[in-house]
Picture 1 (cartoon, helix red, strand yellow):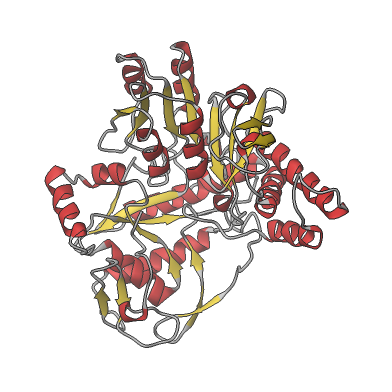
Picture 2 (picture 1 turned 135 degrees about the vertical axis):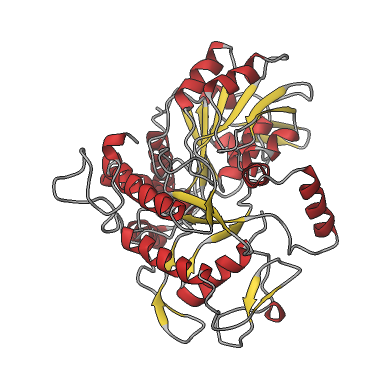
Length: 482
């Protein structure tokens, strides 16, 4: 995002905005479920405000229509001579080409492997790169767990640290690249799911490639908001974060990286010929997609790529920049609220993570949801090392939290609250959030008491009103887990 694309937060465009129009005054796409009314704990129905887009976005209407259009002809992929099978195969392969296009790649030199999500894609790649235990993977403390944990199974990890504002410089990465032994791989986030900070990916890729190091980009947070950078060797992202929540993600990389060796998954569809003692693997990408492919998820992902392309990156960037400015500045101005990460004048995605003085993050999230119909996320956002650094939690605090979790008590896990927007969000939605948050932190009594469940760490209203879970009602996994 450039400064010309930023909005002043009130809907009045700076230079670069359409004359007389402000970005983010209305949604850029129509979502399934938009306008749903939620019965809040006081009995009043309020429109649901979705500020948890960094976790999962709703399905767009266009994506749902594409899926519904496929279903009458849904059949097996790559394996049938029937008419429906051939239609489904064609739709699946068309989605693969759209994924390549979204990454700025071309068939022939690169391929797109359809996976379940970014986590599976990165686990898949960690296996396929044939790393050895003495190899080093350079990564950063800013990463989502999906780009931290898989590498530890196959190699040693070296980390780029962040500053107190949650950022690092190209020079910090270069220091990690120049340490010995030279890393085999650099695993890097395209954008933080906690703070929305976007590292200088292209400069980092140039530095890595100059040293013969391949770059893997976790683009899960980036792909719905900004063009995928050209520099990384491998890119992974998920449909559920780009308005296609039908269970598909994608791993894009050079075709020759998948032509030799055993695939991550072994089974039907990945082979040419099988004997009891021998297998002849087929060519990629089918070699990497054993089992019955998720054609519905792939078609949804392809439809999302087409819809984002139709909206255009200029419009998307302008929308995001307006929301980011309004959201982060507004939180930074609230007394008693501590905005984590870079200051508001640093360009980020429209994601803001914060704490409230003297108030548990789980209670803030529960009250926003229960009393105002606003969905946010709380906890550590599947990025524990990063968030504990932003919170200033030292080793003693982490050790104490670990000890309590091992006893089954999750009430004191460090955490924060995250509000994240998407193409379905407007400036008015953010204002509703601000008004609700001001009420929650004002000291005004809540309409009901809240009880914290030790097993999940979450807060529940002490009420039998239908639809609001209580600990006794079985809440499943805690909202803060990750």
